[in-house]
Length: 221
Image (tube, rainbow, N blue to C red):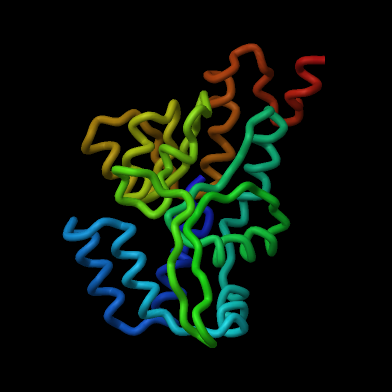
């Protein structure tokens, strides 16, 4: 699952950068969208414009929230035996507090912001890959996972959408998939994803009952 714009309907990264970065960060973002620089280059430069103390960040993050149906979706997917994780080209510093606030404990692959001084920050990329312009290479992070269901909304999901077995797409990702002829189902929120989950699981593992009340373990007892 992607995070910004997907798990968190209002892009958490954009919201926090609008609050704490100098306005020049938007010009850098526009250049990235125009293809003039890679996502990793863009993120590195944007973070240099970010000024916030940890306490200020904590207070701002507390005002954000995730899609209210994400916990139910995660619980239902796990009952089917699925492994659920967050793979984002955003920042784990923003993601973990919002997941915890929703009572979710999920593996997260994302970029990192390292504190520099009282209120300065530097981007770090532990999940990148050679030849990939993203800070977090989603293809690398999900390598070997099959069948793979992607839920995403933006440019960082474009590459992975081509190799995923199922794509549930919002926003720019839905537009991209339609333009490129990539099989997908357009959704608006996780209520849609939850409603589609039995159908997806029936396609992936046709011997598993599609009722959300039946766990993977009990169906194989």
